[in-house]
Length: 191
Figure 1 (cartoon, rainbow, N blue to C red):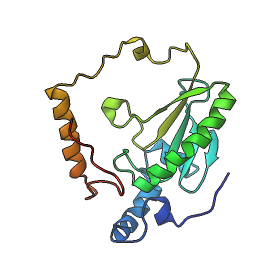
Figure 2: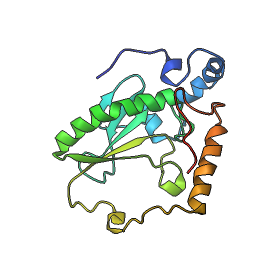
Figure 3: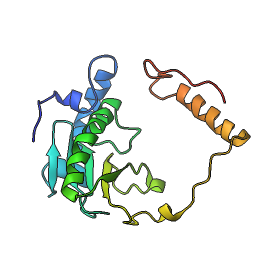
Figure 4: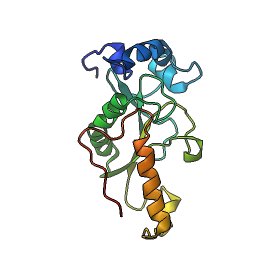
C-alpha cells in the first residue's frame, strides 16, 4: 500500500523557502521521533500494529483499545506532539485520506456513519502525544458517547458570544505562522 516516495523534508512538512533550513535542522529529531512514543516505534517497525494503510506521510492502524469495531487511527510518520505543532501540509495530507479510509472502514465495519476525532491536549483526552486522528465507526443506538443524552442549548446572541468571536478573530490575526489569513479567505463581518 505504498505511494510515490517524497523527500523526507517534504514528508515532514518542510520544503522550499526560509523555513526549509529550520525544518531540515529539526528533521532528524522528527523522523526518529520521541524514543518513548509508541506511534514512533510503530512507524520505525519496532512495535506491532495492525496497519490498514501506509504512504510516505502517514499510516492508518487499528486502535489497540477500540471504542467500536473498526476504530482506526491516522498517524503522521513524523513525530509532532500536538495538532498545532503539525505542519499544515502534513495535516492536509492526513485529512485528504479521511474520505478514502473512512469509506473502507465503514464498509468493513458494516456501518454507515463515523466520528472523526482529534484529542488535542491532556484536557481533551490526548494520552499519546503524537498527532493522530481517530476514525470511529458508529451504528444507530450504540450509545458510545454519554454526552449524546445531553441536550444542546442554542448559542445566545449576547455580549459574551460577541466577545468570544472577537477574541478568536484577534488570535487568528496574530497566528504564530505570521499569516493573518489563508490565501483567498475573507474575515467575516462583525455580528
